[in-house]
Length: 316
Image (cartoon, rainbow, N blue to C red; front, side, top):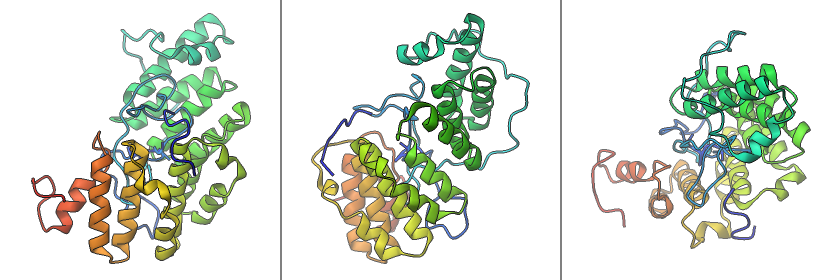
């Protein structure tokens, strides 16, 4: 991997982060905030959030991706409830739809005026709610989808919202559709992490081996690497997971969310192997790169030092 190619494009950590692992047999994957990776920040697609650098917001809406899963991947916190019905949730009166990025609004221009406006408003609401109320964000995305199922950005938004709500089967369906429509590989890390969420780590590894992964930007490739390492841990391959993360980018001089997420994932893999001193070293390195506090690195250092998470202490 080259160190920095198109670095300003998840999966939740995300080490999105921002965005726990609900599937059986998971390692220490309880989310701290919404990690991350993706996104898988995590993301990903038009990423769930905007990084300092910064990733393009999903559908033009800047949202804060939560923190990383314990393994660094960006799986969402919730498992979601019943899918939204056919009644549209109300949009906030001040929302116009013009809050979206110009390129997203351009994609919606193929719709009739009334439909385009309604879709845009629901996409704005989905972006606003995806951190605090992902189930409601998903309902807004479904409202947009009912009017514009053939628009790639709408299927992408629905997939991202489903992922954030922990509706991994729905997320896969929507992100596959988005990929068919757009031809973009950007969704692969989030799709792979959704397979993990469904308890199918081997399918996640199959997606990680897709040749299209090579076309992702550096953040996307790192996200996929983190997801694949998590899948190996799901399979009990702890040593292989750690080894897979031993790449030159661990020592990148850049302070980017993907650097923090990669280091965090590696530190957590080492901790799972009982290599506590090395794990602490890499949690410290993750904290150094984590300008936006998207990982649990400081809390993990405190745990290893026998301190209460949140307490101040030396992290050298």
